[in-house]
Image 1 (tube, one colour):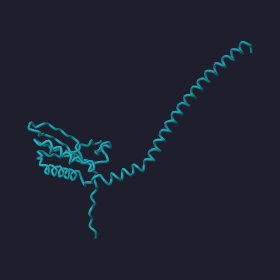
Image 2 (cartoon, one colour):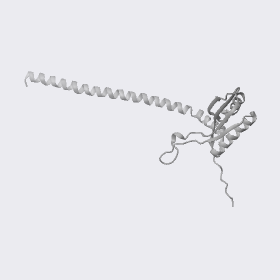
Image 3 (cartoon, one colour):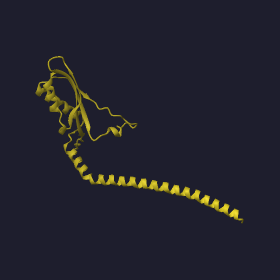
Length: 193
């Protein structure tokens, strides 16, 4: 082999090694960066999991508190009836006349199988009653609202529309009260032989 052929062969060999080595080095560097990113995301996930495990007792305690304090009704009709009863009792105490009372049905989106969609199912069930008052004294109305708005009973005002009635400090109002509850099952009565 001639000297020029050897030089040319050496040049091509070096060029080949640079191209292949550079490509291999680039590939190795990219893989290193991907592995590093994956390790970092796994560290973050592990930290989140450790936090969730450490807070497990707190969440169990909160769940227990909810089970103890959330009102339980046998059905939505029972919850609506009790809510309407509380609304009318407070109105009677303050001398307010409720013009219209209406149970508001909860519209749940149904899936293709006819069951409520997962996102519509929550921890609480709720019953809503809409009350319409006309020409009621402002002070008595707000005292009524204050008496019915009870977070500890999981009951509150969820919609309120007030308009002046034109006479001295009297208002027209439309109020929706919502009672949040858990539906409890009714024990079945069986006949013992």
